[in-house]
Image (cartoon, rainbow, N blue to C red; front, side, top):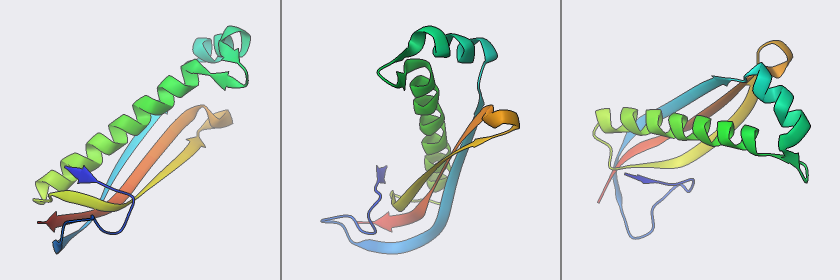
Length: 106
């Protein structure tokens, strides 16, 4: 499935707009991972453990959105927006939400 943050697909014509599709993923942060990230994983201001969690949450959210688009017969998703938030006590969970417009394109 073609997915894009743009509102059109170059070389393709949108035949039908099938509605908004979304995907969400919420991952809890492990307290031990948080502790060790603070001690040994942060190098140059980056945390590999957190980056891996973020990548996994984004992958899951996109996968869910694509499944919903497939259910309505879409051949693509345009206008994709990606949002990141921390939620829960002390920001202990990471939420990634994605949304876009499912389309039938030729």
